[in-house]
Image (cartoon, rainbow, N blue to C red; front, side):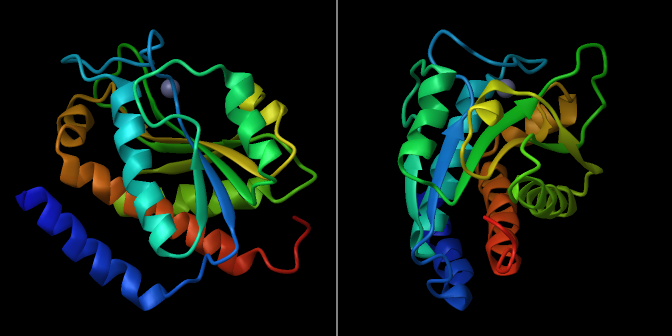
Length: 207
Ligand SMILES: [Zn+2]
């Protein structure tokens, strides 16, 4: 109950100044992994698929409150084919596809940074990656990188698309931090900042 009150209080305070800035925008959010595909597993057993979903549920709430039309590739712990994830975004003619993950690097329990991937050079994917990477990196006080890579969901995208590795679940400190739902909320707010700055600045560029 307490969590719910804090959530709505923050949601109200945070959303208010922005009004409906995302009105008319279609955003497809994709929580990585799910079902039999656990994704990465933290040092003490935290599952990436669970954290990705929690973050995306928070983020979807914020984006909707800001006027966006939001579609999710999954809203529960189920397996969804990569093709189906990006197909949803293509079919909805999304303005932006954001795939959410948490990274892992075995043998480096202290390593933590924000990485955002893009692939297509012919649209504004790279710019979206830069906006989101810098927003999340700053909010989490992490080094941030924008990288080009051939992920399947990005390869099949016909719309601007990014894959966000917000932080490293393999980092002992970060895993502990991610166990607190309030911190997941903070990460989702950071992603939202990045998405807002993308849409605020993307005007004039080729979509
Ligand atoms: Zn992942």
